[in-house]
Length: 276
Image 1 (cartoon, rainbow, N blue to C red):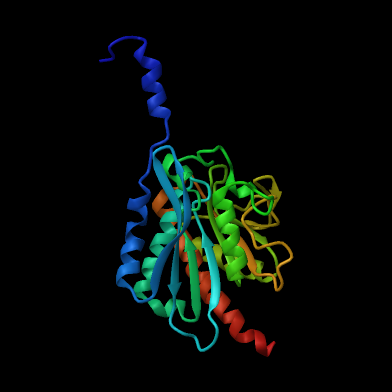
Image 2: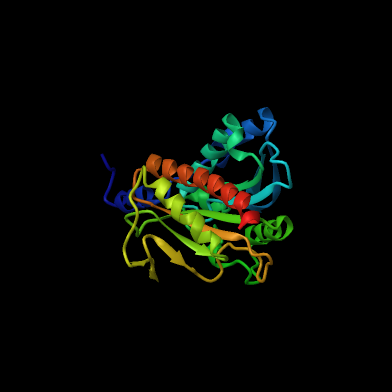
């Protein structure tokens, strides 16, 4: 029983307050993997303090078995919007599955960033605790530490491909954005097809305000996580979106299926490219 009418606003506010998540608990399986697997290692890119708490960006590198040449460097980013946990959970599961079947990652060096927005992820909010949407801050001379650290990664590693994982609470199905060379479209289409084993595709002509064709959008917002401007050769760049209101486990399954498909498709394309 509520003690008095004055308690109602407080209780209502507590019910609406975002549920706080444990960063350590989410990343624990990957921390363990880095200690037990010969393929995986981890380190911190740096961090900052908010009040009495400290936060850091954690990078995991999965070095697949040698493919006979220089490894293909992929950057996979999740959790840049803190209220979109599906990408983070999918990336954790994806790396753990690669440790069990490393042949899926032959020739790859995968740089994984499961939680790009630590305070937002902990608070279950889209923005950081400073009120910033990090996915509008890239290559804009941003003062946000997370953006600075990730930009350094994008510069330093010169990825062959960049994959961003998101979920959209306004979409009823799967879709994605592509940027860069036509190769991006050639990878996103089969990735969406693979993910359709678990969730259907958004086939609307307009998605998130952009013209779309069978769930594929060419372009995107300014300031999104992307390769440094004028990078040559340009990497493939794609953003994979799940419908946020779908069951979380199906979003995770769909995303893992998409990531596995991208690895297989890109390897095949690179193998036949010299003969084209």
